[in-house]
Image (cartoon, rainbow, N blue to C red; front, side, top):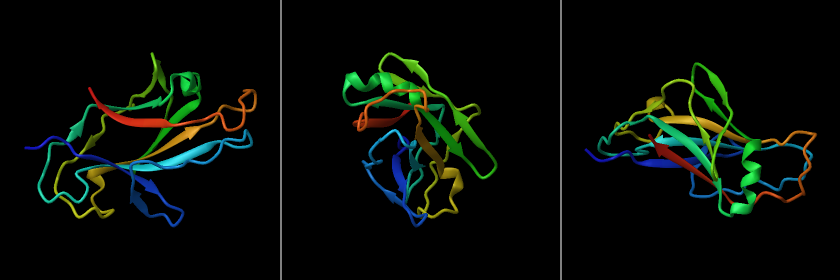
Length: 151
């Protein structure tokens, strides 16, 4: 059986998801937090089953090392049909690692890519919020990389 096949889908303003490799999250101005809502799929529209994705973390890192000091201002919010969890980062070298509080398994079963295949995906929101007491320059954020890392 093939390894898991991960894809990222960005939530649009009309509440639909579009498969994308990159997204422009906006410009940080200090007035409000920035959020990006994603659906992480295993085997999106796969015609054959692949391995389930289990025991994984979400890892954030910046493309340029100088921005890594900003990683502490991120949170990941996970959303399932039954719960919502806010996960704080564990800072490790040049990354922010987000570990799920409970076991998450993304099924690798073949599917049509529709919402009914809830076992194949998880919805997350990446939140950047340095808070009112932080001093950051406007436009301080640059290219953030989001990865799924199997344990």
